[in-house]
Amino acid sequence: MDKHHYVPKIYLRQFTKKLDGHFFGAGPKPDLLRTIKNRHIEEVCYLDNFYTLNKSESLKRYSLEDKNYIEKNAFNYEKSKIRQVFNKFKNKNVNLTRSYHEQLIDIYISIKMRNVFIRKSYLDTGIMNQTLDREVANFRVMKSWIESVSGENYDTLMNRAKETLLNDTELHEEFQKQSILETLRGTNVAVNSAKDKIQKLKLYILEPLDSKDYFLTSDNPGFTILGNKVYNTNFGKFDGIGFPINSKQLIWLSGKSDQSRLDILTRINYRKLTTKEVDRLNFCTTFNSYKYIYSESKKYLTDYVERYLAEHGSKQNISTVVD
Picture 1 (cartoon, rainbow, N blue to C red):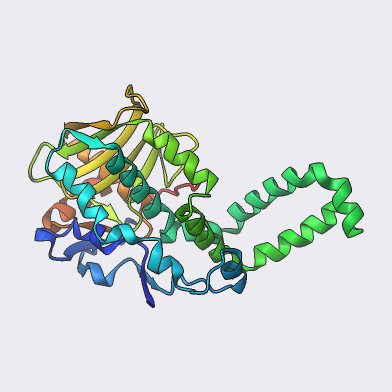
Picture 2: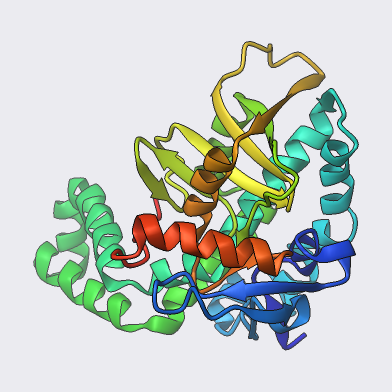
């Protein structure tokens, strides 16, 4: 249980030639893009004990005894659901049942939430400081009561609490794990709201028109678009969500669906893309990657890198935002 993959191996396998587990990787920053290496899915996207519940408070809060509960229970979709859902698109199904549609959204949300990029956001003191400031503002309506109970000035008390929280990096890591647990139990309000929004979007499967083109993935798969900016999640406001599911297909969710919530089938809209359009989506994958991008074709990745550098060579990897 020590080796925890923050991107499912079964997902990465979809981007390997003949599903053999081998693909090619490159770093997303300009000085690393030309360093293309042969990799295997077992060697990438994992950290030791990444989901281990290290704080006894977390175990007590969720009435758990096993510190490896997340790894054993939160990602059961890896066993068969990813393959079953993705095969619906490979087989060119016209519709997706409500059950499969919900599973697709659950898989996407989980892959985003379990990622190391999200952990990075919890460890970012700037982001954490903003989050805590919002909470301090929310509790200000109880200022008089808090001061009467604590015997301290509200701002003094809150500033000391903020400082303690900001300096506890292990607690920040635990926040991500708790969020995963709450999602598993269906009690994560923000995630439930995001799922509801995504479920109302039109579902497209985008495919390269040219057989020589490929979709890339990364160590932080999936991205959100708002205007001309790329975000990691930003589920509060977005124009579209992109999620590559294999080398030849990318899920695109955008536009309000005209289907009723009572419909048991979701229409799947298939679209062919030019090389330039495929590049644009691969640029988004590159921008939103954590450290690496992956492709099943070394030749395609080599050629893509040159096109990317021609357009973005002077720019560093674009910072994405967690909302």
